[in-house]
Amino acid sequence: MSEYDQICRILDKEFIASNQKWMIEDKGTLLKPQLVQLDGSGRKNLAWTLYRFDLDKKDFMPFLNRNHDAPEGLRKFCDYILLVEASEKSYILLIEMKRGDASDAEKQLNASECFMKYIYSSAERLHRDFAGSTFNRNNVTLLKIKLKKCKSNKRPTKSSSIDKTQEFVTFESVGDFPIARFL
Image (tube, rainbow, N blue to C red; front, side, top):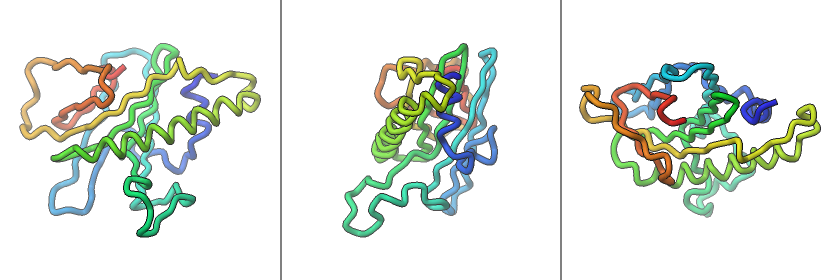
């Protein structure tokens, strides 16, 4: 059983995004929702599961302090977690969607990374429940992505490279998210 399969078995299906082709960010503002379509082209045998952990709609961290004296940033989380499996390698893409200033995205992405480390530890502990399959963190690549809405609706004529060595990868999108470019 792959690391991708193990993580999918740990995360509750209740948080699987209802639409596996689109990421939608709608905070009820006067602006239209930010819509970004997942593009799985460019790579064969690509499997993914998109998770949405929206604290405004469903509290999945009830054990953390919600009161006014809670430390700032305690209950932060990214908009989406995209689990991807390609060529027997697992990828976790933590995605925070932003229209403008993305400075607070780092807190959300770092908090989400801590959550994923807890999921890794759980998978390592549960190897007997996974038919003896061990969980190897080295088989998982995690990226923290600030997905910014591009100000122009024109698609770039040349594909800009993505520096996956940065702690936070900023990607400007005109409405699509090319998954293969992040793998």
